[in-house]
Length: 391
Ligand code: CAA
Image 1 (tube, helix red, strand yellow):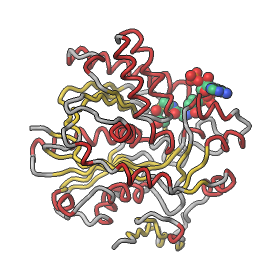
Image 2 (tube, rainbow, N blue to C red):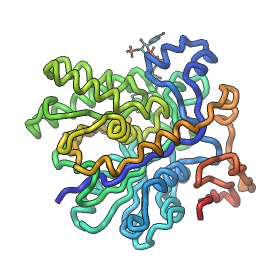
Image 3 (cartoon, rainbow, N blue to C red):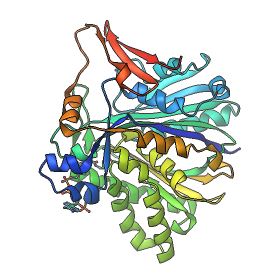
Image 4 (cartoon, rainbow, N blue to C red):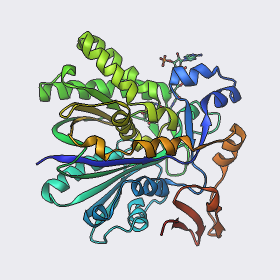
């Protein structure tokens, strides 16, 4: 039985910062951000969007009534969750009106969380072929104003419906994974910004890619010539390329290098203008490939490299399905990104330090300023209040 991705959608908040303006404000040559890092725009979440609402908005774009009835498992991958106890999956389950005969929980291993969710969903569907699983990957990446990681922030979510006989990508069984206890990036519970050893994280990311690729190659007997495209976890769009190029140069023929490098460019178009969305980054890259590469042939193999600092890496693969183009919402995604509002660096800095009360007091937020259908409308009694404007 084929199991894999039947639907995929994303949501990014309706505000962004231009990376050239951020560079100028920080006294940095703009080309460093646009060429050296490879980012053009960075999505900024207003206070009315958190990881719950970003994910719910992403899912709202792809679910129909039949999905809502069949989804019996909701897995939420995040590393910027809003509660140490209650899972974001339960809030989204309610906001979307999913059937109550469902499991719902949150899962964490830095940017690897959603990949763990996808592998778990695969097992669930193998045992329950009629069920559908909603996998959510949602994050707000925050390193801090004026920090070295500032240019690699972002906000957004990807929602994936997994099923049997998927119409986009059937996942193959062979997969290679690797875990090592390192401190390249982490966020203690008391901090709302991440700690990172930037150079070390880059080295480890590349090392993990090389390790899982070699492990996959020997498990599967396949090589780069067997892949139409490779998608990467993309904290910034130069990152995947930095890991891929040295391995390609040693192992791949010229024509395979050319195809994989060209398709890498197709896979980063959305990431370039959204920024780092942590758990969702790999899947935003997959969506970018599917929606920017014209005429991917049925049966093409796509490789996916997932990396979650701390660290776990995995390389797995999927086969493009004949109807995949009918499942995409290209016009909606282009429109969603093009109507976003650019904010000044001063406005971004104000939003960055805006906080919800932590003393139990009540706050009502101005949701009319947020174009998203699902918003955080306030907080009362230490409970976040959400609203789905479409209900
Ligand atoms: N024109 C063109 N390019 C320029 C330039 C200019 N004027 N000035 C500098 N550059 C280039 C540099 O040559 C460099 O290119 P290479 O990487 O090809 O050598 C690039 O711009 C970046 O320059 P630096 O390395 O000097 O940048 P930096 O010291 O400011 O740090 C960073 C960059 C380490 C990515 C930092 O932004 C950071 O710490 N980010 C967060 C950590 C991160 O994203 N790590 C990735 C792996 S970990 C992960 O994947 C998990 C996750 O999501 C967090």
